[in-house]
Length: 299
Length: 298
Image (cartoon, rainbow over all chains, first blue to last red; front, side, top):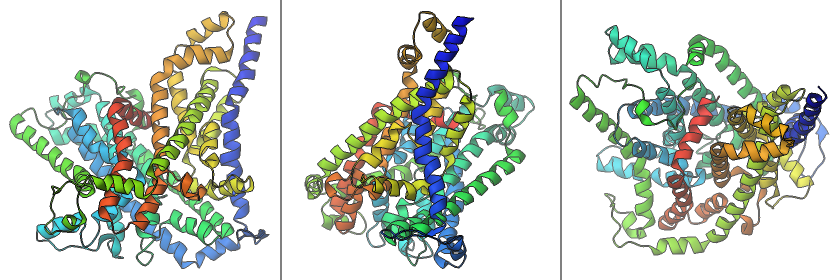
């Protein structure tokens, strides 16, 4: 028994020691900054000056800050467009690749390739695709005799253009869907076939229900990630035209590091945090109605 | 849960479409759909490469031409020397290597503690750490910046690399989760046998668990590398001196200067994209496996 307790003591000592970097990292780079951010958000603080306590002023100021609402609207619009589109496209392509396809790895590589393009290179490339005079998109449209557009340079089409652009990088979502599809037990399909069900019934009664946990995962990750879009606004549009693409994190960045309003920007950050918490909570609560977890567990 | 991605393809699921009955027709339709998807996916790449190799005059012709006449290879040389992309490349590699090392080492150490050592409060601490994954990065951005400013670490690689030595810090905690999941699949008898022989937990970690965990380590390495390579906001916030720019930052500044010089811009973009694509072709299997792992083990 003495040996066992010795082993336990050893494990406890080493356990704490080895968890230490992670715990310190959490305290220094997550918990600490979060609390600090909350504290900053209650102050009026210009860089270089000293912060002065203003209570909830920053939060109440937000309600009458037109740009705050503009940025919230633009970000919501973008998220509502980009997330479903990416989900549908990547699910459809994953379904295609889940058939008996020759050269699966080649197809998978093709569809995965855009995901590898570094975000900034991606942005630079699409600036030229969207260029109204010489860009790829308008060149092709003109050749086909169709009307061309101003894309990211027009208030009305700027966000739809960025949504189309976001669809190009559907590779990660697709690969996760594909793995999910390959995990659907074969006997379920056979059961439907024996009952005389066709392709549509197999999709509706087996594939879709069995895929709901994967769809849910991709939905949550997609929404949380898309809501924090930044690079497109920073490099492509600078929030324009006429603030049409003033995405939330870009607005926050501008407030903090261009206008040096650290207090107000911290309040923006906390509101973003609350928004994401609420969205995630709603998604999870709603998930009970359509995600088949018990079946996933039985796999 | 789902089938492990490395399983041979022969065990795959039956086709879900009604292809078996009307095979020739269905197959043709399937490949037609795949090609219809592949063309718009690849077109931007083709456009990028042809533009990178063209003279400006030919680029602006209508209707657009696809074959450069002549091939202007010098676009690459000129673009990559117009700004010190070689230096940016070296900087990016330095940041990426230090971050990968830190992440792999500290995350596996932590994952070992959370999976194979018994101590009170372990699961509570782990759940707490994991909560950081869902946190929007914008919330910690300003205080973290202020902290580095107070420490006089701005305009250096320190803010970009040091957090990775604390188990990735923030979202990087996800790696601890992945590694822990993998460690849990290794038989515990191996540890017990080593302890019988008087090994310390560190020895068990280093000589028993780590050698058996190469696939998971490769996955963490690749994704940390890509994440660092592609990071834009970090370098944008912390680096001012052009000598310290990373590729992403260099390309962004290049694009704002050479906004009208298509050939240069496309050549520079191609040069930034190429290393990652090359890496992908060498490590393809691990890439797909890694993405799959992140999706399945949620």
